Length: 434
Image 1: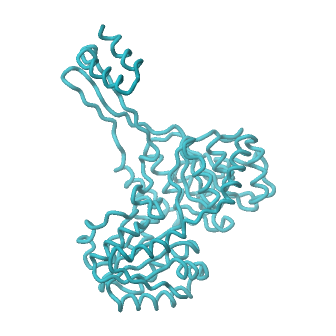
Image 2: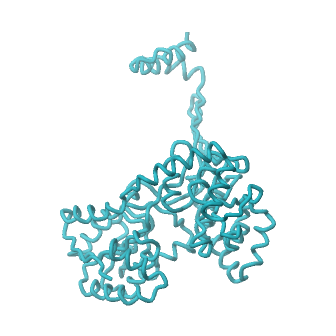
């Protein structure tokens, strides 16, 4: 299981590294046309198309009447999973909710001496649609995705939330998805997956009301559908394959670093796992650990291919060069596996989530700590952020000016309008001061 071994000395070495990583972005144009047709079909035929696609790909016995999961079944699922697991889910939900409560923004107002009132009103969107992948035939449900997407919408104050997830072959959902929904007090769940589910949430069907914002991870069909809907509905982000970068010094434990790299590699054959370190002995020790640990993983074939194609151990001359490279890589997840990570934090400009020190592995953030694990990928953290309460809010400016204000400033406003060739704008103001 070879893993790239590279050297970064200064910015000139970035060119080759960037060219290599850019290949992960290679789009599948065939998917574009297929998804475009699916969106149009669901928009036109509604439930009929939704059921047709679901029968073809997921559950061949699905009927229109079975699209929505009865609320009683959602609640009943709490008894179908171990009580210990319910307790873990409850604690995870509580921690994630507590974190996101700190993100809430308030409306604000300013008042001038002349009575002018200016402000910003923050309001939640009316309705949100969440997509939850079923995972390997419904047997590895992405329950953490439901938690991470639902909670910021709820904290924002969204009153109507719909959830879709592909049914298993027998027409059911994994009880862990239903139980998690019950704990989140969500009772609107539909049996639908892939691009047709995204279309239904966006446009609405006879059974599903349209949504204003869509969120949730998925395969390339889901991601492409969301991308094609930009401008028609709000979306969380168009996320690519997962990635982790680890900046490590000689205080790091090789076995831990390898385990953390593999935690991303097992996601997907095009997930990227990169170690950056000035310590050559550490780099060699991690390489050996990757080989031995990968063999013991249930998903070892996926992890091995990921490491072979998109994994790397990059040696740098010093920590300053390491920080420079980390900012160039602009990774979804960044671990600072350092004796004193806090001294390095100020040098980090681009990272989706930053994990501090040897006892903050990336899965802590995936499931339990509280911050959202829905993060930008493919270097888009240079200009975007983690999913948050703000994704489910909109802001309206409020302007209240008096006749005295218009009389004092009207001529200036009219002049600015005429400079832009907008005579009616100018007259709209002037008619009030004649």
